[in-house]
Amino acid sequence: MVQKKYTQSRLCREIVSAAQEFDARGLWRELENDDCFAVIVPGEEHAMYATIMGQAGMEFGLMLFRGENAAQDLVEMLDGDPRDRDTPDEVSFMGFSMSRFAEVPAFARTILKKAKAASRRENIVPFFVAQDPGKRPRGLVPDEVRKLLFVLKGIVKAHEDDLLQPESIFSAEAVQTLVVEGDPLDPELAVEERPNDAMRPSNVFALPEVPGDLREQPRLPGRWLIGCEALPVEIEGDDRMVRMVVVADEKTELILAGEPVQGGTAEAVDVVYDAFRGKNATKSPGIPGEILVAHQGLFDAIAPALETLNVTCRYEPGIPLLERITHELLEHLAEGDLPGAGPAPPEIASMPKEETPENNAPPDHRERAEQAVPMTPELAADLRERMHSHYMGWLDTPIPALGGKTPRETCKTAKGRQKVALMIRTMPKPGGPAGVDIEVPREEMLRELGLE
Image 1 (cartoon, rainbow, N blue to C red):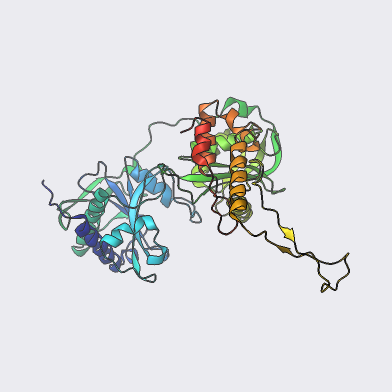
Image 2 (cartoon, rainbow, N blue to C red):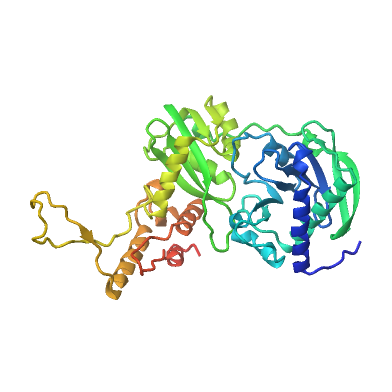
């Protein structure tokens, strides 16, 4: 069937209007969040599994899981801990929620701009978003705008005709499937019953892989906390998600490991296993008898293996102590002071104020107020040079987070090169005096190590 062609501006206007009409119907008042259905649209290889958002009274909209494992991914999200505030990393989805314009990130405003939608801070508008496995959330590409428009038009039409009657994805053997095609502005709709992929039995039950050396590690007293928080970091030319893996001792509040990772959970698992091996702040190998993990994906990856080692591992989102420790670590990062990552950047010394006769306190108790050194072009150039030398010197500085090796030494292996490159690309921009712009010489550092 030949599809009609429309300008992207027209499609953007239509999808904003369709999202607003969808929202006005308040489908969350009629359906439970597990009353899910599938949607088939032109250009999408697999059926998308849909869930209506809004039953909790927080986010109102639509979420579509995509790909071959869409049904299983949806079930895992619905069956997860209700306290979990993290978006799954390893799934593919697109959809929208109604949000204040001020809360819509820049990447998602393109559609609103092309649609000439209301753009005052307080306006409630559709926030369109998509995510690929292991990647950061992003805006919809033109092909996805057309696909989501098909979906929204199809759902509204099915609801108008009293055809939208999904059942619980947890128990239904068949799932209601909307087949939408034709003109995206006025599509044709067919409603079918198809096998519920979420009920498909797994044919393979593989035992979790446990690295052999972990079986030999001693057991440690106490309890560890493990988090994997998303960082607001964007690396040019690389849209993978960046997370900070934090391993901490609950009793001492010591950060045993804190390392940024990119992509999926495999890298995060490596950080945790390396901490067991002794690549941690104490340099002592061992596995505690109990572990709490605040990230669902990381928990799912390590819990089965730890269970075979008789280690108690529980999923516990929103651990206050871990959140505080992580927040403090990220504050250190923002200040350019990453614990265990090398010497702190040089600072500008300040000069004490001259003592004057008007100071009445005895000399032994007089407070010496400080005033900043006046910034001159010469001093600014000197500061930039010192900062440049600091960062280039970091390449040959032993780093605890790298097992005591220098970044240059670590780059002798493929895994080490990946780790060092990520550390360089996620180094925060250093603070400096007003009027002095200081940059991390990332490209020069990467070239020096052959990591371009």
